[in-house]
Length: 129
Image (cartoon, rainbow, N blue to C red; front, top):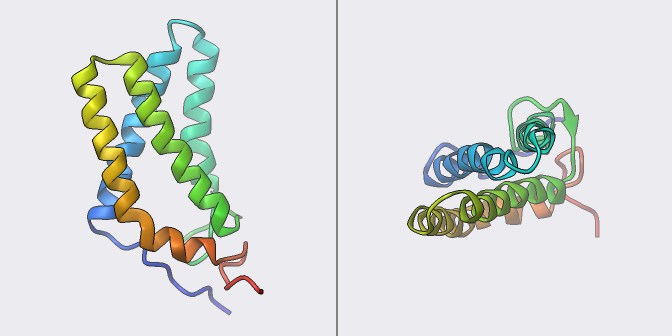
């Protein structure tokens, strides 16, 4: 049985989420490198690796490690928080303010997908009450 598909379709929400992820992948190691190169490298492994490996069936076409919907939402939130916090630590305030606005808009546009994900188990099926 295939998992029902999510509202995760190409569009503004996906594009903004991707841009915010890119910001997190750049800003986080940038903010951490002056303190620890190992932490900077680890941040990239976590921010890129976890969402690549873990996903909710039905939300993405290929899933290596099935994860319940709340885990997928948590990984997106991790990316958004990393982008915002790291941009404020690494870059000038005007740039960080743009990143913060981008992350806020991403959250608003992600709500339909998150509602769908929060109701899914690790197989992508609706959670049982």
